[in-house]
Image 1 (cartoon, rainbow, N blue to C red):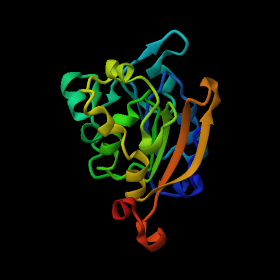
Image 2 (image 1 turned 60 degrees about the horizontal axis):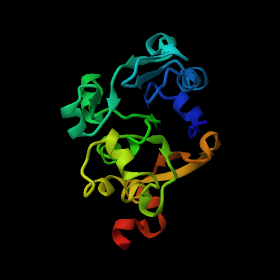
Image 3 (image 1 turned 120 degrees about the vertical axis):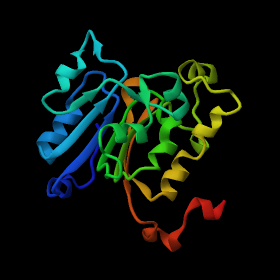
Length: 214
């Protein structure tokens, strides 16, 4: 279950913008945002799949709470090769959100987090709720087969580690700190839900960032 930091504060904002990447036809997160934070929140849900037998039509399931978009979040290279994926900047531009703040960015996209996280840092987000798939090793390298990953994301083996490296270090250096962490035991704790909130790095001891210390 994803945790949101200080939902009461968001509820008192004039408006709020929520992106939910990865749906599988489930609407629990969007429903909770609408009911517990407020219906002033503009919620958008993204998934390259739009139907499954368990949850039916995703658009119908999400309609009471969110606007469903039938595409996934991808890298620039992936978006060029497959129209079912768009970058975060392209997504925001198409929805008229360029320059706006994403108050809550929830992403559970079956490994795409390891390839798209650098682009998250190019737009203004206040909270990132992410499920990482297969517990990250040091420097956020993951203990799954490289060949398995390459089947989903066709990068060369010489470049795949670039996307995994320094996931947590770079989020920290951009002001994101972890306020919640919970293992998903449904799959043997192979996935972990992290919740980050963005602070000014002036809150860090002596403005410490990893870029200054490595």
